Structure formats: C-alpha cells, structure tokens
Image 1: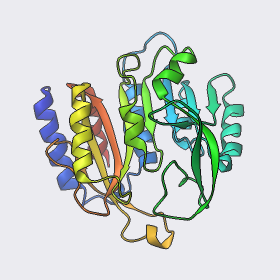
Image 2: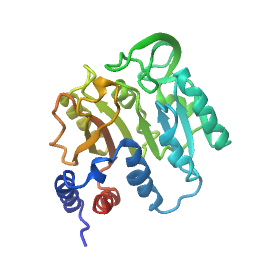
Image 3: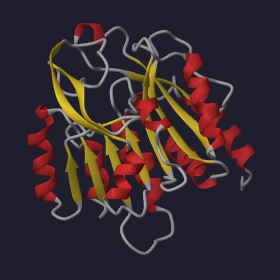
Length: 278
C-alpha cells in the first residue's frame, strides 16, 4: 500500500498523464463533475464531525455546485450579485430552508458600500472585470465585502469548503481571505488566461503564496478548442497538474485549482481512485 505523500503525488501525476488521452470520461471531467465526484467523495469519506459542514460559494451563479453539498446536509452561504441569477437561487433557498443564505454582494479585497458590477448578456459571465466573452449589457452598483470579515459578522464559525468563481477577480478574493480565522479544508478557484490580468507567472505567484498558508495545488487544465469564441461552452480536460513546478502555459488555458492542505494523503488517494474509476 502506498502511504507516503510523495509516492501518492507521483502515482496520481503518472495516472493523470497516461489516462487523460485514453479516457473520454476523464476528458469530460468538468468543474461540476469534479465537485460531484472528487470533492464530495473526499468529504463523504472523512470522519464524521459534530455539526453540519459549511461552504461559502463566491460567485454562486445558479447554485449548481452549492446544491451538491446542500444535498449532503451541509449549510451554505451564497454570494451572487447578478440579478439574472436570483430566481434560480431563490428556488435553491426554498428547497433547503434554513440551510442556505443568499447575499447579493460581490466579494473582493475591500469592504465597499457601492462598486460597479458588470452584468453580462450571458448569465454566468458577469463580474467586477470585463469578460472576454459575451457582452456587457450594463453596470449596476452592488455592495462588496471581504469574505472573512463578512463571514465573521454573520457568526460563521467553520468553513469546510470555499468555492470561488468570480470571472476574473478570483485571486483577489483569495488574497483577501482570512486564513487564520477560516482555514478551509479545500478551496476551489477558477483561473483563465483569457483575462488579461491572469498569466502563468501569476499562477505561480498564487501557488507560492498559498504554500505559505499551508496549501498545495491540484490544477485542472481545460481547452475549449476555440468554442468559447463561438459562444459554445463545450470544453475538455487536457491535463492535471499536481507538481508545483508544472503550471499550464497555453495562452488559452483555463480551468480550476483545487487547493488542499499540505500532507493530505486522503485527498490524493481520493483523486487516484477517481482516475482509476474513470
């Protein structure tokens, strides 16, 4: 049995590198299915703790990822300022009464009563920065909060899972987070080199900065094969990176980084089991 973290890392990277081109099912592993399989399986197989697990969903959109964990009995704080998403999120609140809270706020590096939020014509692409896709149909003033400050003000005492998908300002949310008060077990962050502010160098810097907070990266790198420019949102997984020396460098790379605690052999074993299953 492989137990050392180094050996597990090597096995997981080897499996990912060899299986990614051979398995259509692995290539179809999107952010939604990563949440439904890897992340949910990881938490389900942990020892049971007193109380409910809790997540913060920053950029909740229609709440599809939050619902994965609400179905398992979690509580969730949903942050989504786009009015186009409110109806779907209200249905989610009604389905899980008392366990989900919706805050129509942006999350960023400062607490501001008003900040301009760019509403995109395509639901899910709105944010504090201009999207490279769709078209901005207008700006609306919204409140902006620092996540840690706001969670503390709402009497949150634990944070098991933090998901961030803010269409370009994801790393600002991460940088402003209070890791001392809310050290999430897993953090799922979107990145995209389509945004001019993001690059391989920035990714390396973020990974190094997260290392100082005790986290290692698991990068899911996708290609859209040119689809996004045609308003077609199909994409495929082209690589998984666990080695901190490896980051995607393609100019059209985008995907998600799952930050996990250093030395977490259980997450690596869950990943290996998922790849072998697919």
